[in-house]
Image (tube, rainbow, N blue to C red; front, side, top):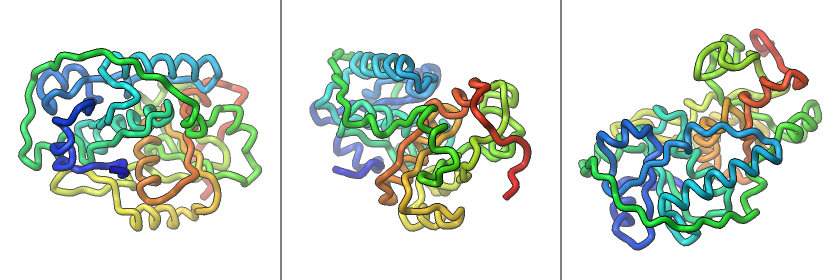
Length: 284
């Protein structure tokens, strides 16, 4: 199974197999009320804020090799991440997939449509916390190209060699808000100079199974609509690397190969007053 996104019936066929771990990325409170049977809960996948400094990256890698290993995930595990719906958790299930891929793990997926799709198909949930057998997850360097740092982004400004793609909500793009956590959560509002904008919601559409990632041709059409050059590397950013993960999955499912994420994103960029920004309404 090579697809990133899997359907609820595909998860059912996997769930009882050896070393398959289902990860609920929602809050502990939501998880405690109801979840997919035997799913473990790792909400830090969503909440963790990372800097792209060497120290920040090292801390993040250690954080998630520990957290995932403590949840019973090893290098041999097949892992399926889910959230409530594809657009209600700011891409948190896709962030789980992205993080595990970054750590070099090759066998993980995202439940397409999340818990909403699972329930729409009539599958059961419960509130039972499973017993967890801790494992050791060892990261390798194969996923390192998935993340670019602040200095790498800064060094590419104005050179037209990569497409820097801002996928934040519209109020952040037009510099009315600094983050999803509040208009003034970050010290500055605006955009990284030269970025194109493709709001992450445009990668999805409604269905009777919740919000779902668009088809490959629909995703490519959205990209053509903003004049994206298909031949250039794409570097994504949002606020903290969650909505970018949703977009990352959509782009990869559509066949884009050269996609990376500025994981520190606006949370990091805005705090460094030496980093240039564009403020106010975009000129185009």
